[in-house]
Image 1 (cartoon, rainbow, N blue to C red):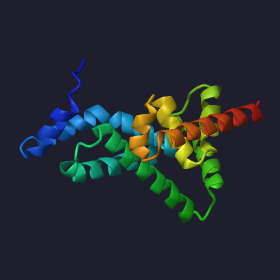
Image 2 (image 1 turned 45 degrees about the horizontal axis):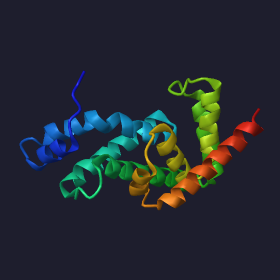
Image 3 (image 1 turned 90 degrees about the vertical axis):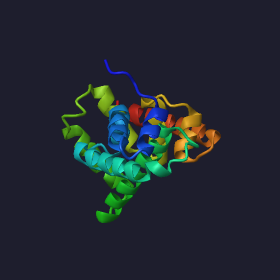
Length: 184
């Protein structure tokens, strides 16, 4: 079992050009899977998620020297990942000249065909319900439900007040419940 390296140690090693690559490898080991699943739950498709995670870590590499330590490292990386997802979904919507609902249907088809989401029917229904949510509600729900993040942490990632996040999460839960009840 590997010992989890502290963020402060990673950041310290990253400051030194001689240990920068080692630091980045430690950062990847610590956060790559978490970031992947955060992105994957937003964009559904494995290949898209892989590409976006690469983009996220390229941005992390380019901007880590300027990281000011005024937020936690993973919070900063989640913010980058969340913004990449929203940008990607908006581009997909514009490129295909379709509404977000149409993108949600397309992603639902991807979900149904995906070997990566081979969970039980209830899990698939939950994923389909999530696709009906606006992007921000989906982000809030994913971070709270799957990542078990505190509202304060989500607030730092999304730059939204805790009160607004609680309202967003509550609305997301209500919409998911309504979707699941309508599909019985």
